[in-house]
Image (cartoon, rainbow, N blue to C red; front, side, top):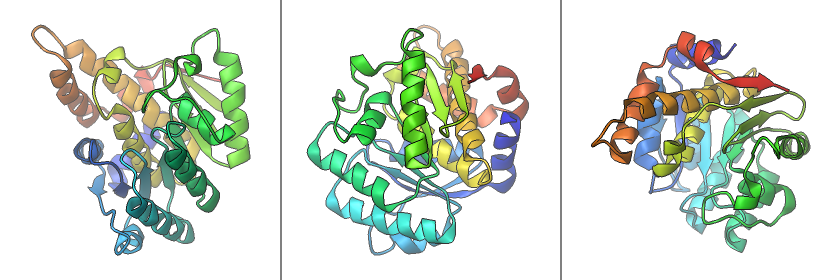
Length: 273
């Protein structure tokens, strides 16, 4: 099943419009190219709708938020909804400030999302209207562990069902659910947390998978999450002294570029609940 999600990305080479942040925009463009998709980044309200009309998928990332960018997101998201183009939300830092949380909640109210991809603190902020993120990272109390897995999964399932979306919550254990079925993913490596942009890259990757697998956003999101985790493991295995996080970042892109559908199917570490 997961093999097919990646194969469709490679076959269709979807154009993915990303309204994302200036910290990681280059990484997002490169990971889309590596997986076989094509990136386009246009965040001016004057062209956001028009560019979205050309794309197969749309990713909205709140990383470096301002009012101009929020206006572009609203315009692009509504155009994508009108055209049936899947939209992915990355609510970076939701819960960290009133402005950021309010913007995320407004987007959630006015736009239909195929997938919402964030850490547990960000998803909790969307669900409850407030939160306690540590900058753009999950708060310690929100980390998903084996001990907290059942409770966390129930919370995320309820959120996904209420929001009528697929929620992809990444952390120590990744949870991907549409409110009924759920993937608990244990792929990945701690070094993913040592580079800027791993989450943003995953959201861009999710946009490509969602664009190429419109009929099954749950499988699309699970495929993207498993692919990033597996590629993180592959990249970390290549790191040798005197390599560090810079080399890991390069190896990660190489791993995405070289990943085959068969390797994704065979190497993904998940259980269905």
